[in-house]
Image (cartoon, rainbow, N blue to C red; front, side, top):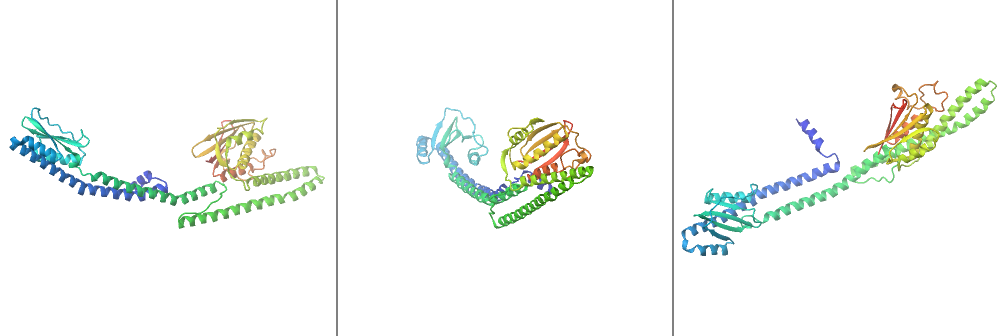
Length: 439
């Protein structure tokens, strides 16, 4: 039972820390206001209303009794009541009495008036109207063949303090909630900033001017995150610089090997060894280019469709069909994404003759699809093709220029943006590559 209630609360309660905190602060204030209001209306307002109504009905009852017993002074009695009791009394002897009360069932004033009139005159000899006139109440009391009509102000039976009380009970509550909103905004803003910084860092974006703020515990968490971010950044930079340095230094011995191979008299052996050295050199060049594009590149808000269209212009004589949306603005590292798309287009044109590029934009991300009409890849190999230097078919790739780093670099670039890469069978017959990058 409690587990079910807990799930219901989780489903309908707000997910934001700010609104949850606001509920914690505002709920006691609202409950207190409701309790005070109920106590006031029950113990003060309603009791005062009952007393005032009972007193007024007693005055009307006295007027009615005197009017019946002192027939010679009827007009004088009416004039005295009109003058001293703030009444407007009229006698309608020729008009028949029709019992028709116009009242509000939800009004405590109407209930009290009905109860006291019924007690004084019976259930069939009176009627009253509290709605036809804004500031007046009309009462009709059966008298012989006609009726006695009395008008009096509503404040005779309704305490005026109720409106003032409602104002003073509402205004301070709203003021307290407004002050709570201001304080909660200031308290939750550092948490929101920390979450945004963590999200940016997870996407590989460069974080500028991150300053811990807020309460002591929040500042401590922000300081620890900042230190962790700096350590990870330093580690990644050191790794990239080390591998880049190794790749660069390997060019010298490779150049010497190429010179020595050219001096070999055995042409077949020289040719095979030369091909191996060239493949190693291509690997080094690809990695060096990747490291150069990744290093210290800031994120920019740019239209991805412009990058795609500009990139396709370099393949003028190739069969590339572009069907992307125009509005694809997103925060990315342009050179890295350009390299990523170049790898996919090159792969499609290497193993096929036609490439098609499409897009899909949702609330949370942008997806780019690159299809080709090549031989495709077995589904069992999808998990392996993003591994560095992995070649599906060694014999098939002998005449191709790739070294097995293209999709690995592409996957690394997309992952560094917080996205993912997936593969499926293309409608063109080849491979369909999906790049999903969060907005």
